[in-house]
Image (tube, rainbow, N blue to C red; front, side):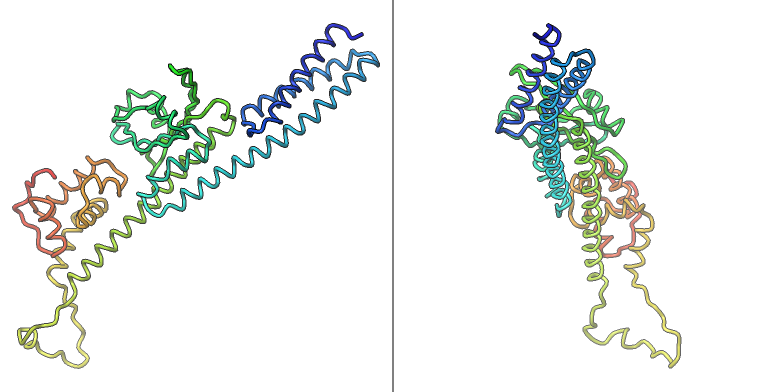
Length: 369
């Protein structure tokens, strides 16, 4: 007959085996958290059996060895299931990263980022937000089920960053923060993993994933961090692409404006003396081009980019979106442009830029944009 201590060990081991079998035989895919917990429990069971073997007699040792064999078989099966689940999770993350890299425009990226991140990290809800001038603003939300949005509607209006401890910590440290939130009035508890979206070395956005505790494991923070990093790089690439496209559009318009026009009749051009054979050619610079060059040389590179986007008809908010800066920064650039062009307003500044008109001193005290 087994001693009470041995009997308690057998009872505890069988309970652990039953729990592990439940996870393995469940038609639903076992979650990383349940697999981790079951593996840890089996590991402790193995240690307990090995410890009991040293003091067991021959009969008890045989029983313990058979029990150990069962535990090791279950542990191996659980490990293979965990590896397969990890592979599926990694594949989902890679699909998400590839989808982010495949976005062809900033608008497409903004529309798609939250749903892509939701699927990649198996979250209940994903919130994308912007951070500008120490103010947090909601941007995009994607939820697995309507209940997630109903039970946790979240903040809908801009909030000072100092009033949001978790978001402030993410922005200040540019690192991932994990926090358990709840239970709320509906009895729901979620794990919130928050990662920065870094663009050109500055945290301009936040990726916030709300997950059920059962799906959170050791790799969750790294997954959300990878998605945040990928979003930042995608915004950088698309911003450069949009900037180059805008510059090319402005260049085409400038080439059209500077193209020589055929004379309509005899004029001074017909009376220019013919250059002697072998004479050194003379390059004539149109006055408009010289005036335009003088205006551009008075601006910083960022102000020149702002002027090019103004010429395309973009508003201050749209320019801020393209250049990934705050609207106050754009307004500062526009003010400098008006002053350099001697213009009273945006229209006048754009006209002088495109037509190559010389700056007017009358706009030195131009009103704010």
